[in-house]
Image 1 (spheres, helix red, strand yellow):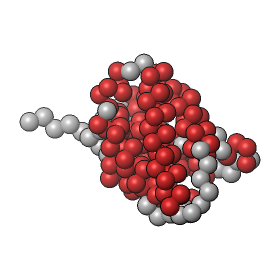
Image 2 (cartoon, helix red, strand yellow; image 1 turned 90 degrees about the horizontal axis):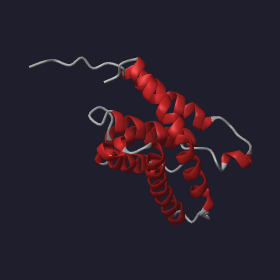
Image 3 (cartoon, one colour; image 1 turned 120 degrees about the horizontal axis):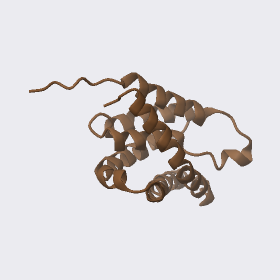
Image 4 (tube, one colour; image 1 turned 135 degrees about the vertical axis):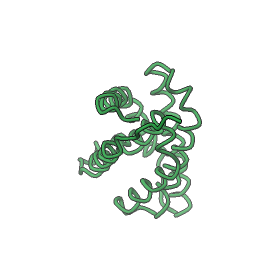
Length: 162
């Protein structure tokens, strides 16, 4: 039995840290509403690229960290990140062969699902949810996907992460 050396865990962790930092940088109110979901982009990429290493549990933990960092309801992002990770792993073989524009459409649908669940949770908490509060980030995330996908793929190839 051939033993495959697994490495690159530090790079994966650094990509998530960078995504958290990009998500926490204060922006003007107008730009705040269209900020791409960087953590979700990184989670989806690693779930598609390495479905055996990054999975639902990793999404759950990243979501809990994001909940604590953004002072949102504990478990809200954990639930959505775990669901997005599950769907990305389930569909990873199809998504990988799509051209970038179809990948972006798939990311848009996943982000709309994440936004709908967040909207539902916020509605149960009697907060006034807005349709645009999840539509605009979903659109900007889908537009940002091709560039982030190509960048992370280059990083994965350069550091030979498997």
